[in-house]
Image (cartoon, rainbow, N blue to C red; front, side, top):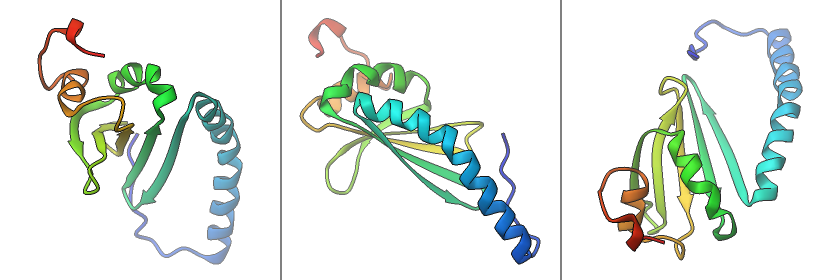
Length: 128
């Protein structure tokens, strides 16, 4: 999937059609996101020219989904947000979609997060 920046001027008719298409496409997405919400996972999308950023929050009640989620992220790297929250960053869809997975602070240490993302090696029996 490649996202091309819009460099042509848009007409008001074209903008209206694009909005209608986006709204129509949102309904199937809404259904999928609702399934995740029931598991305790929320996703916020930020769309910019040539880039999509998806911020995924995993609640402490939903940590069982975390290993499967992290497995699907390319180039997963553990880190911390400016406010100290643990985060895994990576990409999906040929690097066009940037993912940030916010981890419940009380659930995992930075060292455990590094092991989960494959950036450190440890005896798994000592974890979780």
